[in-house]
Length: 409
Ligand code: PLP
Image 1: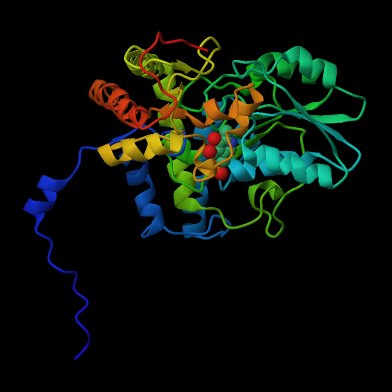
Image 2 (image 1 turned 180 degrees about the horizontal axis):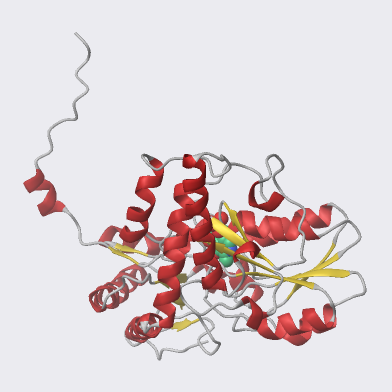
């Protein structure tokens, strides 16, 4: 007799009663795949299979789907379809932009608040004989374009400054930096991973040569993304093999993933063109103000700077951010103590450190990031839960002396 592999019977009535109300406010880490994008992808896994490089019916059908998605992404970015290179996500796009353009002896200008996909690649480039300048940011987490201008040298080949910061949501002055790059005849890459679906993106208005996006940050599938490569720019590929993506990225295309990315791109563009971003901004502001009105010795990072509408990063003195993340998770609210890739690390966030925040305060910070499905009820839930959780944790603090006037930074 074969072993009985049936799952133990689950009593649904018991499970449903025990199911906790959960609210997800960690969209900058990832977002759920939109049901419409999933439905668009589904046939391409099974009956509509094909290799987009094959010349027969199956291949041409797949090729058509890939090219339709390329047009959708191009519309989102304001570029030509031929300028879109599909990648496996933001990390690959950032790596391709930096390693593809820079040669030993070149100079790279980037900022100290980039995602590690750029920062660690820049460090690697430095080990390979490329000079790197990591620009500082002000106390709100914004790069000064004049610092960029001053940093340009005769051998500067690339400027890489992100469009929106993943931890605090600040928007960087990318159009001004793009103008400087054009004046000085330097390539400009921007990591727009956290900007898509939150603010409009137009590669011409930004004046960039390279721009990376990631599907899973705007309700597309994980493991998908694209790099905008301006016509006339020829980054050295990361992957060699077949001639896919006009020789810019070898490997059989991720057909279903690309279809999902295209669908999500169209949806993100419509969301921003409509009132979606404004609605998200109003929810974020209510969340921020609702919490700060009930918690003393707390404040918001980058509150005075332009920010994407879905993100707020708050500090609460006299507690550990990680402890608060866990306490809130136990009550059903998912937030982050820093960038997702950093969670579990005890080092304070490099972004907050670059803004001049002291380590104790940086460790006492929480990032709330809303996705397009966020509701008023979600905000009410968080506004009720967070102050209670903070009060409980602070009761255990040996240094917290009780309520004082709330301050902001
Ligand atoms: N760049 C930024 C600003 C990000 O926030 C992230 C992910 O958190 C990435 C790049 C990496 O993107 P991916 O997860 O698609 O590799």
